[in-house]
Image 1: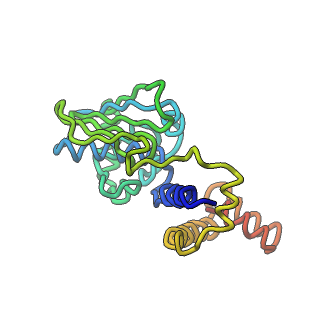
Image 2: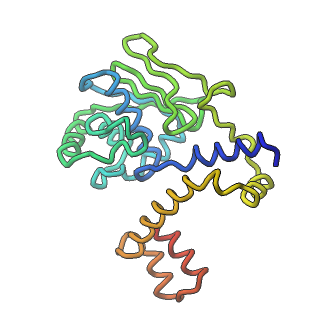
Image 3: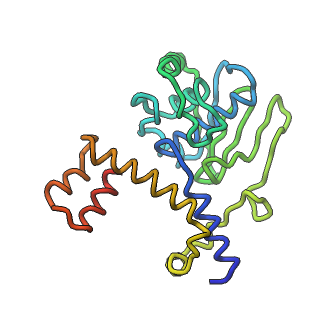
Length: 238
């Protein structure tokens, strides 16, 4: 594998393996909303979202992380405004409180958040508009544009000249397999160690408690302790 392609694969891996609190789509909306609130510098009167169909589809029916089971785009955005910390990026809702959740419920009932569909854009596209506007495109944490009172405060172009750009068009099965076989562990050790630690903790939690359909626990109880069963069980529990 030539060095340029190798470097691209390492960059893709580092770009993808980032800590996130729960499902990334509602978290991305919460992050955009929290950032808009931060730029505005005060509590907005309302928030308007404009999202791609893929984002709307993925967020519509899932529980918003750290919300006590609440669902929906309006919940994700409102909770991001009320209690989110933009500096935490995909862990933006890590520190929300019960008071934040109750305030979110009230604002959602009042129609604080609205959302419209944006067609003809990237699959991952979010605009969060209070009086300031924040645009996320191409990656859950890649803010491409910030506008306040008509003034562009920040803007980048998601193209090859941008340091933030990650070219995923180079991905194919042949090169992925070659990369996996030849990668120098020291180039990816830090991020893989973090993934192993976090994912093991999540899997342990799922195996030790009766959450959901308990697929992991059922596999171990009914099919034994073979390494193949353990692998399936830990993945399911996670």
